[in-house]
Image 1 (cartoon, rainbow, N blue to C red):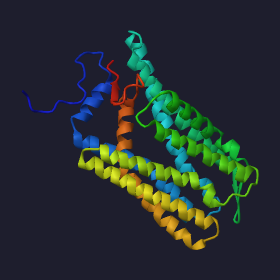
Image 2: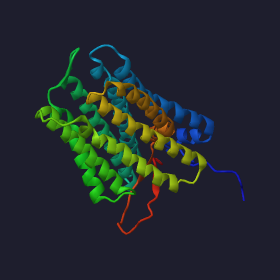
Image 3: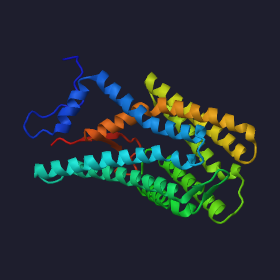
Image 4: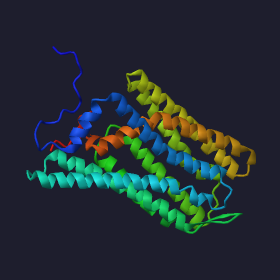
Length: 318
């Protein structure tokens, strides 16, 4: 028996083999190159958040709140363009194939459409924020939180319905995140649109609970993971969640009038971004490469009686 490891993807030796599969096969033959690309792409994505936070913290211009959204707009747009391009590639290859659409073709197409839908809604929200937020040297005026957050409300409702009717590996986790997202949005609508006084400690409570929920789920992942590197990345994510919850706490205290808490918010904010970058840079880079070469990984469940869910991978073997 041959002890050498076989490549994850072996293209068919015929003229109809998709270029995506051939390129993916070449990447799999060079693990160091694949690792470098994953890290590079992940760090490039993380740089958008780092630049946004840097603008928010250090820029002296009173328009810094609007300018801090620009890197995030670019990131959402890049994801939407990537998924839209690959959707076009899928459609082109299916038309060229002329053998109809298989079940896994529909699955890949559906996942790309979902990613386009999510990234587009985030893009619209960020663009609306620039138009509806007016800043001066002394104050920030938000004209309509309801209008700004309407795409996110749609996203949270659709996502909540999905996790309710379609069982996933962590249904309760995603449901809690959607409830917290909607709670944060409605609190800001009451506070800003209807001038209802709510202390910042309460206003930012759903965001604080978001990091706590992520912290709890990371402990479950830490138990499930087997490799040392996987456990280490989850540990970095746990530290990032702790820093994130702490930064939100000090931000709320600062907004309620405790000016000395600003530096604590800034330090914990940078620390949280640093640890989250380490934890998720490689994973995001892998997702981009998989999407770029039409090798989509996702989770699904056929029956509610099935408890042990597994990740299914589909490739465009055209």
